[in-house]
Amino acid sequence: MRFRALCLLILGLLPPPATDAAVPVPAGFPTSGLSTYDVWREGSKVGTYSVDFLRDGDKLTVHTRIRIDVSLLFITLYRFDHDSVEDWVGGKLMRFVSRTDDNGTDHVALLVRASGVFRGQYDEEQLLLPGDIIPGTLWNPATVDQTRLIEPTKGQVRAVTIFDRGLEELKLGARTVQAHHYSITGALRREVWYGADGSVVQAVFVAKDDSLLTFKLRTVILAPPARPPGAAKP
Image 1 (cartoon, rainbow, N blue to C red):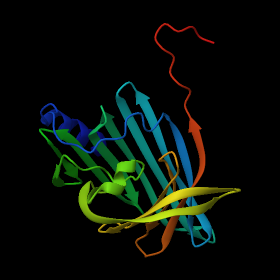
Image 2 (image 1 turned 180 degrees about the vertical axis):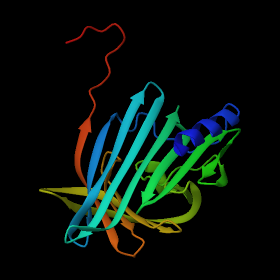
Image 3 (image 1 turned 60 degrees about the horizontal axis):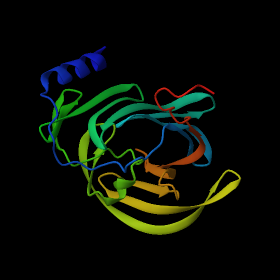
Image 4 (image 1 turned 90 degrees about the vertical axis):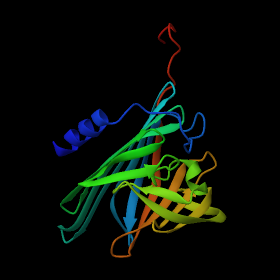
């Protein structure tokens, strides 16, 4: 209830979006579809990660879900649930909202573009961010050119330095793929590998206990292309 009320409150208070500088998403990327990843920690599968892309004309909605459950002898030691939604219009990020359950502690972040900046809230903290910044959700290939990213669980700015590690071969199940490896360092630490089509095929996050969480691509399900208006059904 607090999450929904917060969204309505901020959206109601903010003026209409204005034309301003922004980091774009590449034209036509990504196509509508669902990418699903398995999450591994110390050799054991501990969860799933998915990114759902929905295109509607010049609008793109990206829904990211993370579900992690670290257990020992059927006893849950740590649970992490995270959902975020990004609304892009004309290649520009207009709104970002996330809800996180960090082992029983709930957090909500909301950012809305208005007058060239992002305004919003993380829990009870008011946020004001520059308009030329994108979330650290990694799916956008423009991520590797950034010096600042939005921390997805808190909606706050994190300064980063990104290093190009070059092409590497990755084992994904029975397949071996070529992927471009980048290291994100600084206030947000990630390793990410992009496939030839620009999509994420693997990522590594550093957990709170400094263990490594490895996200490996399992499946990609592309949505069927939309029919032109008036086109006959098959």
